[in-house]
Structures are given as structure tokens and as C-alpha cells.
Image: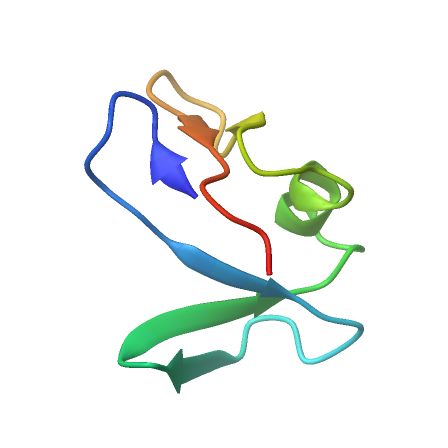
Length: 68
């Protein structure tokens, strides 16, 4: 995901278990989230280009850059 307006990016892996685990893939830190978590529920079923709200405050708008 990328913060709306560009800039900050974060990588997530939506998995069935081990939520909260951080792994390194291709030199990037990736956070494992599950569909049971609030973040996982927000990301689940979304496609590239979709907007998502991460966090409750202002500036929580992101968009999904790619889905692999």
C-alpha cells in the first residue's frame, strides 16, 4: 500500500496465521496480517488501485499499489 498522494509505502502479506510476524522478502520488510485482524479485514478482497483506510486518524488514506 502507498499513502494517498504518494510517498510512504508498506508491504503486507495476508496469511491464514502468524499475524504480526515480520519477514524480509527481496530486501523489504513485510508484515504478516490475518483476515481476522482489523488491518486484514480492510485489505481482504481488495484489488490494486483500491483505496483503504489504515488507522483511525486523518491522513490514514492509502491505496493498494499491487496484489501478488
